[in-house]
Length: 77
Image 1: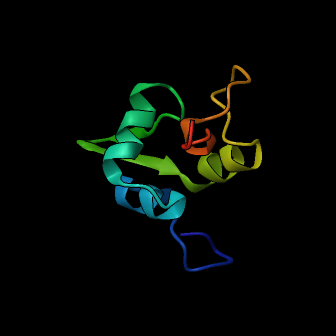
Image 2 (image 1 turned 90 degrees about the vertical axis):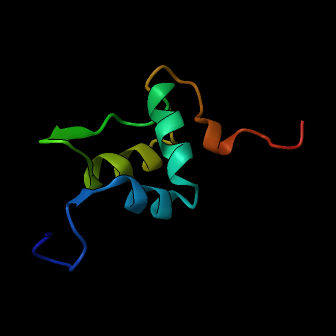
């Protein structure tokens, strides 16, 4: 846990989904499409660093190639 807060430094898929207000399935879809930072694999578990997700959001949720994430694409088109 972060010393300055009670929030964990490592997040599971459910916590990432809640943070992004999407479903867990959408988190895994974004991972498979390289639209979100890849998780760490610890034993049989996948965990994301909170700082990776927060940094990704601050950068505009880009896939690293300048492409905006599907999270923010226009849903009405």
